[in-house]
Length: 117
Image (tube, rainbow, N blue to C red):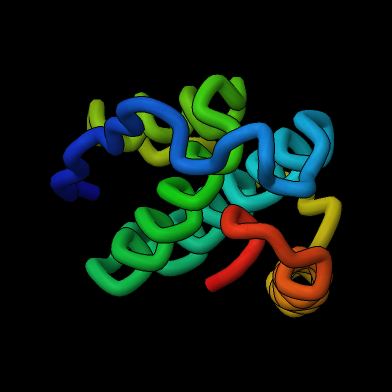
């Protein structure tokens, strides 16, 4: 299957240390988002809609944790036109959406410029 993927580049930090998320938490979210991206692309056979959704997942993953091993590898594989192998998810799409939504709510409640929309 052929598809085009422009590698995502994250320059600088999107989130400062002021964001009330520990590095380990950012990394865990980034890995889960990268795995969701992979499975979405595999299941939809790299359709344009799946690639666009995967791009959003990976962009958020790389902004949360720019050096996340899984996100960096998946981004590279896709940029080479390779579809990574489907993986077992720690969190399904619905569970991950609920986690991200709940975490966003906590960040807003904690206040601070970095934690607000």
